[in-house]
Amino acid sequence: MNSRKLISDLDIIQIMSKKAPNYINSKLPGFGLSIFAKMTKLAQENKAINLSQGFPDFNCSDELIELVNKYQKKGFNQYAPMPGVFELRQKISKKIKKLYSKKYNFESEITITSGATQALYTAISCSIKKDDEVIIPEPAYDSYSPVVILNGGNPVYVPLNKNDFTLDWNKIKDAITDKTRMIIINSPHNPTGSIITHSDIKILEEITRDTKILILSDEVYEHIIFDGQKHISISESEELSAKAFVISSFGKTYHTTGWKIGYCAAPEHLTEEFRKIHQFIVFAVNTPIQLAYAEYMNEEKHYQNLSPFYQRKRDILIDSLTKSRFKFSPTKGTYFQLLDYSNISDKNDMEFAIYLAKEKGVAVIPISPFCTIDKEKKIIRVCFAKNDEVLMKASEILNNI
Image (cartoon, rainbow, N blue to C red; front, side, top):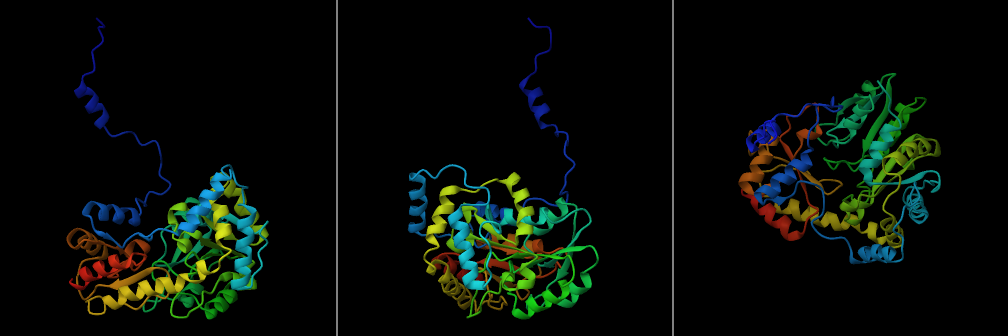
């Protein structure tokens, strides 16, 4: 018999229970699981109606699914070209030219990405170096600042105007220094639903003229804008588009968030740097889906009809909440609506969101995770990209709070 002491089951349990050594010095020590993952998990655990994470609870069109299957059966199942398939980049170029009067060369200025989040990551990573400053108006989508920090840059947070969440240009101007390398614009804006105007474009042109400041324009909700308004793209400005990464998403437009395909349009000198990093992150994106999108884009109605489709859902939600104790102004874009609950509870927004999920059966997103300054707003965000029955059921619960 081996004289060495046998390890018992209890010994194994004790060994396994010991805290593993930390071999990594975290590059993002202040960041944890995203609020979207947390609230979706809470919704699942409590069987709550999920108005938190921004995805539709209805399927994309059968036609689009059939197109994907068609290209799979035809054998388009290997690597796509690194910048994206020729047909899709060409269609994107034509769409941008028609909508915003800007001609991007589909060969050298449009890149297909694995979702808009990857495009944002790549655009920031190819531009920002140690000690560069990036101006981020907030509340802000939560993927901007971590990427700036990962690349050694410094996020500079500037609050949006309190009443309507528009850009506060005086504060943005005051935030610009000789270290400012980029300004991030998001319109239609997540989470507030505000939109930029031609006046904003003019001011942005003026404050970045004769500087080396780049623009990162997150326009993933470009086709979801309400009340007769028109989306104003950074690409419309000849001056700004010459130094801008313009990013959009097919997931928001075609109800396919799980397919994770987006794109970046940028002048050739920026695209060249963008692709240097893109090739080492994903190299290429799903081939049959790219080809399916390209063919699906032949019918412009698929994106032109999106605003009235979602405006109807927005109106169902806000009309049903008019007798509630929540305060709100109808969102101008995206499929998110902000609700002010200051007449209802003294809880902070995280506590109130947890209360709604656990006690009332409706999951929402608190606004504070979108902020580093002025986190005391009593505001939650709800997603109305849901079936009508779900919206009505959720509204009925919210009305009784």
